[in-house]
Length: 242
Length: 242
Image 1: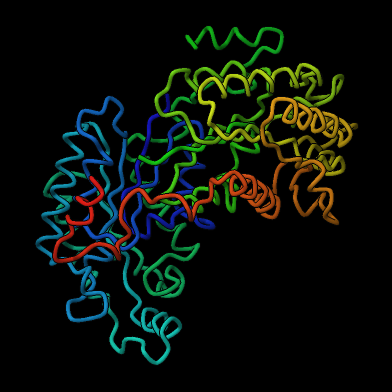
Image 2: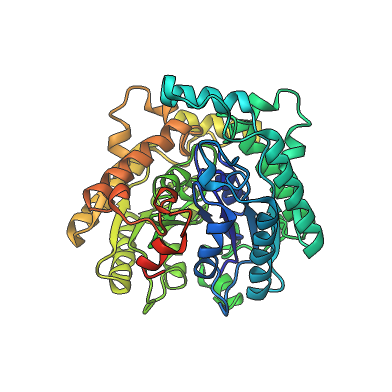
């Protein structure tokens, strides 16, 4: 009975139900209004996301989601010639993959609110420290991701959103407006701290609210308990055709 | 493609995606293995839950949940003659309602893991303080819930679970084994603190694991990124019939 909102993305989406996660916060905000469905795939790029697309968003579904966040790019922007090069997806291909994802979602439902989210900025020092804590002396000497490369993919994401007429969040630039974003928002130079999760949650909520997907204005799936006449509990359900 | 696990209950379930909530923690634990579906209804009793049952668990569904927690009783145990008396459901009716819920769930799917959870213990001092902070001088002078009454309903819940052969968690007695449970686990004498949420999460997980619903042993919905050959990403998907 409730509409669904799908969070489609990589590890930053997959981890969004950890302590203070942005997915959990959205679930709480849309309590009894919409189901938040998590479809996050750690390590995935847009190239591999295309292989999931038709499974996750089957064409012809009678109950397509009312909204979807598409949050890829952090892996696509991994550099060639460094330790995560298998995940590298060149900028133009990344943009074309995003276009294909949007096109498919629109085919599933022209009314779906589609929100492209750019990769977050990269704290290169944080990436190197994380590698040392995992691999010691064998750790990479150069970061596998740079903030500049993430910024190129972020710009590409925003360009595609404008071109195809969907909403977007430039997380890469917005996070960098806050002093000390490197450690405040990122715990290993890439993934989100509780503050970073809060930031993403608030940005997503702004876009949802701006598109009239405002939780307080949406109908609850069943009567509030205060509306139930305890002498005749069936009444309010019958009045609503339940 | 993933199985679903439904959390059916009152406000303690509805609020389970707040910061550190037990529902959010389960979602994270079952990441890419199962979808945690939240069906919590603040203020609801088992009497009103019966009116939702056929909507939430439609008979004849081809994809019934693999597990469901049934977590009612905190409102049923509200006392007659006090401020929440409209929610009071007598013990024998509460037990009969739980039997009806279990019967319906078994009809939906004989294989469903059904877990009855008792109401938590009540910190009566916490309830009175909460009323004063909300209503000042007009606050109730006697708590609308007592630990003893919650205990009676908790015992009734465990009796029904044994009688009908489903799993159960005696939250009422288990929480009271910890020194200082009143403030450690409950923030207003009734609802859960982060520690209380952690407690419920761990108890639910124990039952799920004991019933072979162990997340690490369940298949992931798609290949792990390390299994994807970046020269031929389709290969592993094709091998799995995707």
